[in-house]
Length: 90
Image 1 (cartoon, one colour):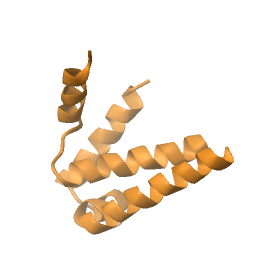
Image 2 (spheres, one colour):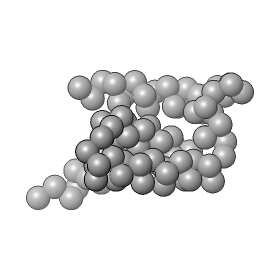
Image 3 (cartoon, helix red, strand yellow):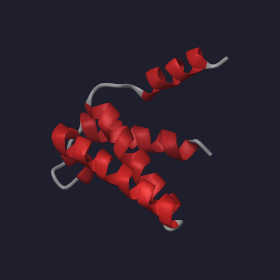
């Protein structure tokens, strides 16, 4: 189940290491302000979808993608986030 997320993270890291101009991911990685704006926009769309009970899964996927890009753009490794969550486990 989490293989898809791992593959997404690998693609984002690949785009970061070897940027291509036509890549939307690369555009977000290069423009941190745009990346932040997109995360905010996608979270708002997810909340609206939950409230209206429509497109919840689609919007949740958008949030995860944009969040992973934002983290990587700011050198925040998902592995570190997972380790922090593990520390909080009671």
